[in-house]
Length: 150
Image (cartoon, rainbow, N blue to C red; front, side, top):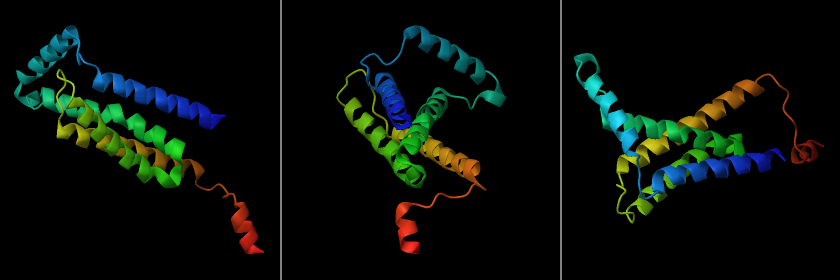
């Protein structure tokens, strides 16, 4: 039952990613003007002038894909964390290729990098937390290992 719930949550989050990245109108004008005002305020000060729209977008893409790495790692299992990380790069590449056919969207190779990094961070974080949570616990010996030990 846990695996079914996890699969449904994963599909739901992937649907959200699809909605954010593939809808014809990418942004709400109100949101754009708000974020532009904030970035403009940061650019007025020398100490924060490095905060640009490109940097904010790159960082937001990383954070948006961290849950993908976590969910895929939980779904696939601890030893397959690296498949979850690679899956994030593949998913992002697919999104960017689809965006080529959507006139109001802009496909950007940096998005593949930032989304893939986010998925990798999520997968590694899940792997590490999983390892820390199970440290010191006795391992469960599988049926095959018991049979070969006899």
